[in-house]
Amino acid sequence: ASLGFETARLFDQLDPCEKEKDRVFAEKGIVGGKSQLSALRKIEKLAVEYLNLKSAPEAGRDNARLQELENDTLVRYALLEALANILCPACKLWNTGQGATVMREALALMGGYGITEDCPGFLFYKWTDAQLEATYEGPEAVQRRHLSITMTNEVFLTQLRIWIGEFARLGAEKPETGAAIVSKAMEMWLWTLEFLHRAKDPSGARLYHNRRQNVTFPMADALCWVMASRCQVADVQELAAKGPENPIVAEGFEGTLGFFNDLAVVQAAQAAGECARICASMVHGFGPQDEAELDAFDKLRGQLDRTLAGAALAKDRAGHALTQVMIPEALDYPL
Image (cartoon, rainbow, N blue to C red):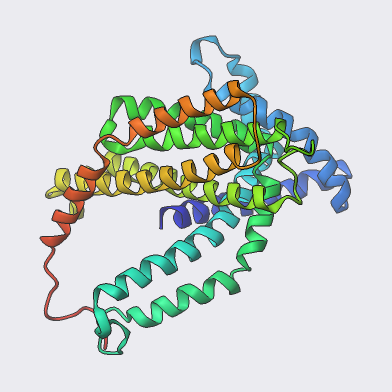
C-alpha cells in the first residue's frame, strides 16, 4: 500500500509540473518528442546537481544556486519524471504480484470457507482480481523491461544514494524502524548494479545489457522489493511525526506506532532477503569474478545480515498484537 500511495502522491505533483514543462518548452520553441528528449537529457545534469546540493550540509553549500535550481520548472520535472519512471512500473509489478500472494495466504487462513461467498471480506474475489491485475495493469514482463531501462538513470541513482545515507542515519538513531535494513539492502542493490556494468561473463560479454533479461529482470524485481519497503518505513515515520496530532489515533498511539514499526521491520527483513538472494545470484552466477570484487560483496552481505538482528522478535510482537484484535459481530460492509 505504501508504494502505491507514494506513487499516487508523486503523480499528483508530476501532472501539473508536466503541463508547466510543456508551456516552458513551447515558449522556447522546443517542440516534438525528440527535441524535448534531447533538452531533458541536458536538464538531468542540473537535476543531479540540485540533488547533491540539497543533500549537502547547509553551511557549506551554495544556497543561492540551490534556490535557483529549486525554482527551475524543468529541473523539478526531470526529478519527478525520473522517480515516476521507477515507482510507476514498480507499483504495477510488485503490488500486483505480491498482492496476489498475500491474498492467497489470507484466503488460506480461512480454509475452504475462504473460497465461498459467505466468507467475510470477499477474499476469493479479491484474490482473483489481484491475479488479473498482474496482466491488465500491463504484463509483468513489460514492467520489468521498463525498469531495466529507467533504473540506470543517473537522476534516480543519485536520489537512491541520498536515500541510502538518510536511512542509514535514521536506522542508527531509531533501530526499531527497520531503516538500517532498508539502507543496507539499497546499498547492496546499487553495488550489484555497478558490478554488473563492469563485470563480464567467460565469453567477454558485459553482464548488464538491456537484452540480457536474466540479469535486468531479476534486478528490477529486487529494486521493487527495496522500494516498497523504503516507502513503508517512510510512511511509518510520517505517522510518528503527525499521528499524535490526530485525535483518532492519539489514544494508545505508542502501541500503534510500535505495531507499525514492527510490520515495517518484518517487511524490510523479507525485502532484504529477496534483494540479497537476487544480488548473490548475479555476482556469483556468471562464472569466476575478481576475488577483490567477491570479497567486497561478501563484506556487504555480512553487514546486511547483521542489520536483521531483532527482526524475528518484531514478527513475534506483530503477530501477538494481531491476536488481540476483536472482529465485531456486526460487520460494517454489506454481504
